[in-house]
Length: 562
Image (cartoon, rainbow, N blue to C red; front, side, top):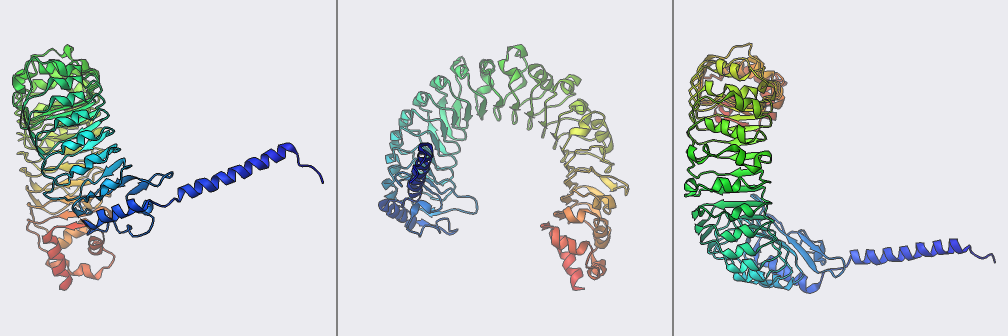
C-alpha cells in the first residue's frame, strides 16, 4: 500500500480536529438554560401583568431562547434581562424576589414599565454581579435602597422619572466603578451627599429636577473624568467663591437650571470659563440679568473654540448687546437659545457676519421688531429661526424681503413668525429655496392670497391659521409636491369646498397628510360632482390624508350622501 504524504496527513488531521471543535462549539451554542433559573423567571413572570404579550415566548423549555433573555454560552447562566417597555408596550405588577436566583446577572433593564406606588425592591442590591441597572420611568415611589451600595461592579444606574423621595443614600458613594448616574426628575430632597465626589470613574451625572437644598458639594470637583453634569431645581445653591468645579477639566456638557442664587454669583461664569472642553452650556431659568454676562471680558473664556450649544432661555436679559458679546466670545456656536427673555433693540451686523457656524437660533418670546434682526440675513449656515411672540408689526412682504436679502435665503429650513402682529398678505415664498416649514399663525394677515404665488420646492409644512385671509387656496399650493401639512383654519376663506379641493388636486394630493381648513366660511354642498370622478382628489383625500379636520370631514360625508 502506498504511504500517505506526511504533509497531507497533517493537513487531514488538522481538518478533523477543526471539525471536532466545531461540534463542541455547536454543542455549547445550544446548551440549555439552568432549570432553577428557568423556574425563577417563571415565578417572576407570574407576578406580572402582561397585557401586550411581552413575555409570550416564555413557554418553551429553553429559557435562553426567550425574548429579552441572554445567557452565557459556556454555563447557560442568565446574563441579561432586557424587558424595557414603552408608551404602548409595558408590563405592571411587582418584581418578584425570585430574581435573586439569577446571581450571574450583569444587565437588568425594566425601564418604562409600571410598578405604580411600589418601592424599588431591596433584594436587587444582592445581585452583586450587575454592571447595568435601568429602572427609568417605572413609577416607583419610596426611597433608594441603601443595599444598592453593595453593587460594587455597577457601571450604569438610571432611576430617572420616578417618584422617589427622601435623600440620596451616602452608600452610593461606594460604587467605585460607576460611570453613569441619572437620578433626575424625582422628589429627592435634602443635601446632595458629599460621597458622590468619591465616584472617580463617573462620566455622566444628572441630578436635575429634584427638590435638593443647600449648596452644591465642593467634592463634585473631584470628578476629573466627568463629561456631563446636569444640576438644578428646588433650592439648590452655588457658593460664591467656590472654584472647585473648575477642576472638571473633562466636562463637555453643563446644565444648571432653576438656580435661585446664580444671578448673584460673581465668580460662576469665570469659573466655568476655565473649562477647556465645554461644548454645551445651559443656564436656563436662573433669572440672569444683563449685568451677569456683559461686564465679563470675552478673552477670559477658555471654551470659546469648543462651545457649540448655548441655552440662556427663561432669564431676565434685556439688551440685544448680548448677541454682540456672544459673537466676541465665540463664532463656533451651532445652537443658540435666548427664548423667553425681554430682549429688544437692533442686533449688530457683526453678529451676522461672524456667526459662520450657527444653524439654530431661538428668539421666541422677546420684544424684537422686524428691523432688529436684519443681520440674520447674512448667516449663511442658519437652518432654523424661531421668533414667535415678539413685537413684529411690519407687513410680511417687507419682513421676508429683508430676510431674503442675504445668503440665509438658501440655507433656512424652518421659520416661525407666529403670534406676532404681522400685517399684509402672503407673498411669493419661492426665494427661500431650502424652506421646509413656515409658521405664520395668529398674526393679522388679511386679503386674498395671490393666485400666482409660489411656494418653496421643499416646503413640507405651512401653517397660517388664525388670521383674516379671504377667498380660496391658490392652485400653486396643489402643485407643491412636498407639502405634507397645510393648516389654514380660523380665517375667512369663503370659496366652496369643491373649488378648494380642485385647487389642491395637483401633485400635493399624493403628499398631503394633514389638512385643516375648519373655522372658515367654506360651503361644501356642491362637492357632489366629485363623487362621479373616481380618479380625482376626493378619492385621494381618503387614501392619503392621515389627519383631516372635523369640518372638512363633515363636508365630505355630506357630499358623499347627496
